[in-house]
Image 1: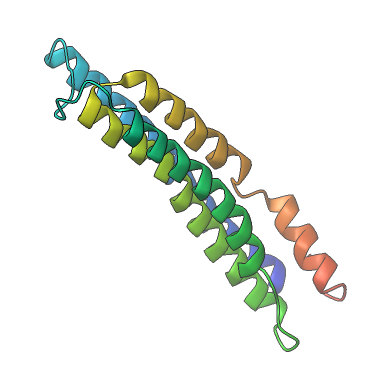
Image 2 (image 1 turned 180 degrees about the horizontal axis):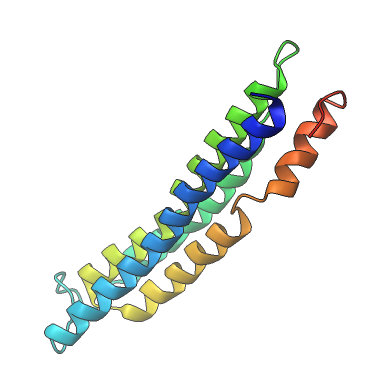
Length: 157
């Protein structure tokens, strides 16, 4: 199997995994709406009138996840002197899947916040953050090809 075929195969597999993770965001929204429709009014399971501390903590963690994604994606794609194009393709796949998984953290935090406080507004804010992250870091074949070609000019993609 030549490098171009390996890249396309790995890319296809990564797109499937990333797409499934992005689609799972909708599952959280559906479950939230089912809970809201069946338990009226849903006020959460944490009977505290002032939940600002936990709310701001969750938003802070979401911001930390955004920073972590930026740092990890760069760190994971660093290459050593003896690595070949196949190793880079595998690193791209791992970095993409890890990024997609980390991009789900804000929506999970939003869902937990909804369960605790009953605030669907906070859920949808954090849902939007996850959705944007999934879109920003969704794998793009052209970007993968350009990265491999820039590091290994002799490779024919």
